[in-house]
Image 1 (cartoon, rainbow, N blue to C red):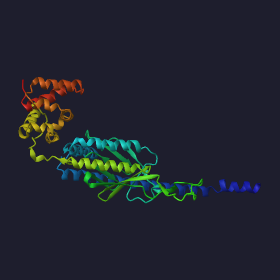
Image 2 (cartoon, helix red, strand yellow; image 1 turned 90 degrees about the vertical axis):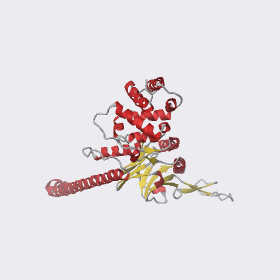
Image 3 (spheres, rainbow, N blue to C red; image 1 turned 45 degrees about the vertical axis):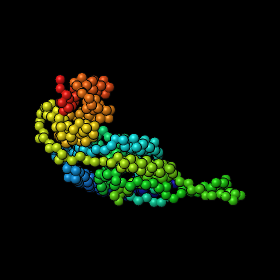
Image 4 (cartoon, rainbow, N blue to C red; image 1 turned 180 degrees about the horizontal axis):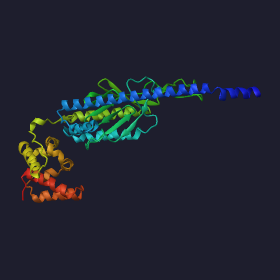
Length: 381
């Protein structure tokens, strides 16, 4: 007993230098890890900044988009230029129901605990894959002002932002915008997790009493594979037929999009942009409406191109309420009331009243929009 007490005294009291040395080694080790983490964090941030800067520059140059104020932060500039890019795209809205089916399928399946994502090639045995948890959101790139249907799938080191007309793929080493024509979608079940039998014994083996007793492959997981110009993103779901259903919906959507003519982008040279002014008068907006209608004819009012041509003018961007107003007029057929027969000021006032009562527009915004349209169409009191 005395020997044990003496040993304990030597370990915990007389041998304090041993503990001090161990504590010092432990402290140095964690300081080293902290410094290393700091360098990695700084390098990662610098790499992300370089990717975003390159992404912003390539968008601006490739699509001849505006260069925004350098005083704004990079993220806001990217949001601004994506907003402008999306506003200039024209596509048939009949594709939206097919796109919404994909979103609903994700809503039904993304919360499954085993749903994970992996970038790069996957092994044949899906049950052995270690991926990161999928996060699903019914939103696109942050702070992009577009009313389009969109959703995003994100994980620890990246995300895919899906729009009806394009996808944005962000990973740790790339950031790019892709057309749907560049995207290949497929599904796989990998190798069977095990085999079942039509007639089984208690232990799961085949019952030899039956001559016809086929082996039935059993799959616990399936993977939806996106291949975008050599890059692969794999979404792994719990259930052997989940990914196959997704593949079917994506393929149907791509067919519908192609059958409607796909996505086109309006070009700027059609109409010369006026110089932006600090104070824009109502007459200036109204003259823009009139100019476009005179050059293209009244039929242009029922086309998305009309909105895109208006968006080419920088002054149009200052009246954000105009775009949803005009989109609603197109979607609900209000234009026909103004372009058929002999429309009058009373017709304008009826439409204005509908927007105020049915669509809950502020009265001053509805009145302002109607005045621009009336001037453009030559409807005066």
